[in-house]
Length: 211
Image (cartoon, rainbow, N blue to C red; front, top):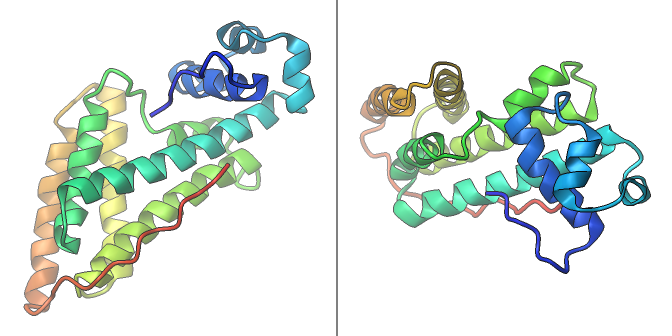
């Protein structure tokens, strides 16, 4: 999802792009400022011109990661599925492709919340807001499908998605998301039985997020 910065991009953008790559791959605390500067190709003065601290840079990086992931997920889901129930299941297919990619190092928001565990920390709050967005997207899909208790369904599906992502990261199991999708199919089939007339109501597009 992260892109290499253009040669003429600003020092701030190059720092964010370097952070997207290195913080995600190597960890937030483990990645030093010197590594970020070398990757970005900028001087230390540029870092402190644009960011007050390493944590301030991490916050900007996480906001950008959140934006990129939200837009990517919705765009990819809507490419492959049209009705709400199909889109709920397509979330698992899209996540499955990501987990199997060479650029998968777990969920950046789960990783960040582990390293910045204080719930009042701004970095932790970005991670929490990201999960709230995903849950809300799933809830709106479930509601558009006419399924009972969309709030509960969204939480169940998010648990399956995040659980599968963590299992894939920790164990290397690349079939984790496929297994989670089977569980999701069971949950959705049961929910559909309770509402046999569940249909495909229009679903408003989620708002884009801008860093």
